[in-house]
Image (cartoon, rainbow, N blue to C red; front, side, top):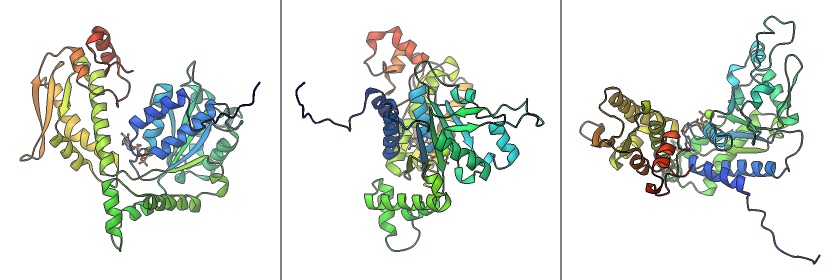
Length: 392
Ligand SMILES: Nc1ncnc2c1ncn2[C@@H]1O[C@H](COP(=O)(O)OP(=O)(O)OP(=O)(O)O)[C@@H](O)[C@H]1O
Ligand SMILES: [Mg+2]
């Protein structure tokens, strides 16, 4: 055995973590730090290096509403478990009183209603999305600043010892769980740094923000304001149990434009996988995209407002067109913008297109995995597909 002096590269990630990372980067825009933190923890878990007797990871996500906190957790579940709904969500505001805590953990034997209660956090619930290959649970506690003291104590036990004791004394093991907590604490302070109404320097922060390139200094200042708000409100014993605190960034115009493309793709996927079994394709002109963005940009609500704009201006009219059979399976619909009327307009450009031709017209590289329709269409004429649509 000769002596070696070969330099190793600890920044490389394994295949599994790499796949998760590329999935998340496609789906979540502008929140690279949050993605990096999830990848780090996941990689540590895969290597068997996580601390025993604790959850796989405890994350605290802060930052403005509609910036992707919940979506990131769902996207990770989608990538690893194959289903965005494989996230157990606890809205802390709903568990303020002791009888509501019983909904989470069940009541002790002998109490009225003991037999009827099915605790929301039992081991069965936790394990319900486990597959042969992957035994992970995603648990999301939303708005933790609203948790009551009783819930807070449960949470501390889960974060520290990975166990929860139910009302009937059974124990729930959280050591295969990723725990995410979200909080909007400090969001007001953070946004007033980026969008100050008064004062010297307002112009510069505003300019950086709307160009989407917030420099390191300003970004750090915002993140610090978030962390300070957390430290003021949460006890040190809680903060010490968090592996990673991430302050999500407020989304600027360039991010919202990318999210628009992503969301339009998701609408198209939905048409492929459902739309009453009569899939069609739509294309959106640049003028129509600009209109959707103008209508959907409200910096206060992040991408949430954009999704509403897409629903109102595109999804609802399309649904009407489907219901009245003006749009049928196999159609190609162009969505344009009509300035005089100030709304989107819809034109049929082709009809009776075969399935494989429709699949080829859609960019499937950034949307969620294709449903059975597109997969079927690919199988139908395999060689006609240029590789774009074969990704699963
Ligand atoms: N960074 C992002 N990348 C891609 N899509 C996003 C992003 N942020 C928000 N979205 C879109 O907006 C929707 C709402 O975002 P999400 O539910 O993640 O907000 P949130 O940060 O959890 O807000 P809240 O604090 O109000 O719970 C998502 O379902 C997603 O479609
Ligand atoms: Mg959320």
